[in-house]
Length: 210
Image (tube, rainbow, N blue to C red; front, top):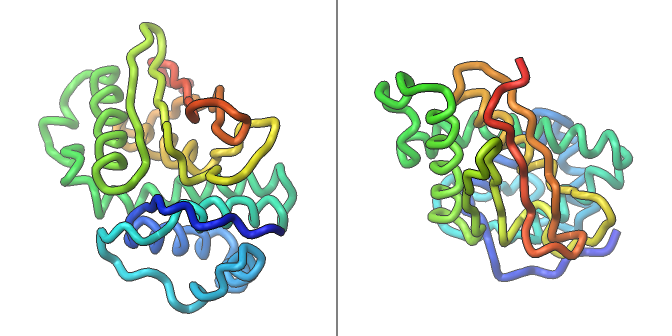
């Protein structure tokens, strides 16, 4: 597997640590070590980033790990694992970033469902844009929301003919489940920078699927 060159864009150390711990939860400690070796990130074995907001976890690290998942487990299973990692990542992101996003307030929990979803997605986009070099934004398209990532860590430096940002889809799915008090929403990546598109776009219907 070819190493992805360092990009100069980064998520926080805290995000990197949470992602690695989520990978550990899904694949086990030996699994994470194998992925780090394959992605040529062996310097992170038993040396996860500290839990701070310094932007030091390069996009190439995240993308390399997602590519290694597909290399080790196959594309289909690797994508399933990436979704699971994204969902597990959100659980820790909420405890770390929830107050910053303003989604832990009681008043937020009491607003109507569609407004709750819009506010929650907007908060996620804002937090990622404020605490990392991701460029995220939300657009209301009438019957659905469009969540766009114009600089994406999940596919940085990779190329393919299908959307590949299952880590981010998992984070969005778990976030939507939380803000909606347990409802499931369909999250579909319709364009991807790895395919040559300008942004990684995720369409999210306003109505839950359950």
